[in-house]
Length: 95
Picture 1 (cartoon, rainbow, N blue to C red):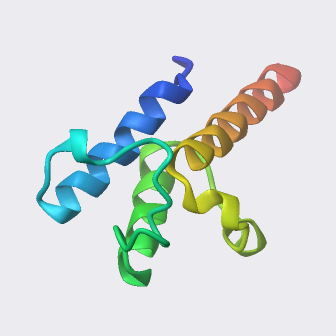
Picture 2 (picture 1 turned 90 degrees about the horizontal axis):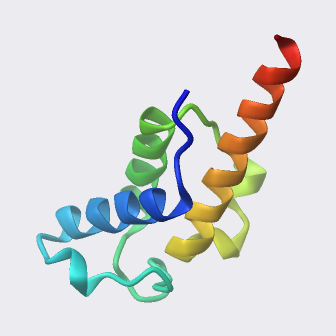
Picture 3 (picture 1 turned 135 degrees about the horizontal axis):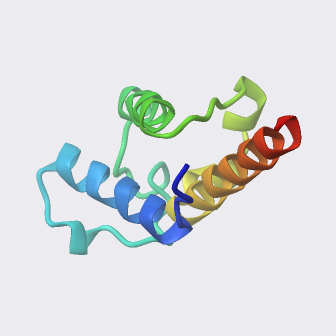
């Protein structure tokens, strides 16, 4: 399985948000808090989470989604990258 870099995940999230808002990707920054800045409403956040879970072989637990740090694009990308790394390590341990 190809290892996904955190920067690629960050760009995927930025592109997703930009597409939802019909703006240029350059207007969305990795350190943006998409809740506080009003970039996404609650429905759009759920849609983002579902899209990320489809795009990458990960699942977020409800208690993880309560973590306010995940409202920042770069932090969410870091969490996804960590989940992918852990899943990859677990897969290797099973082989």
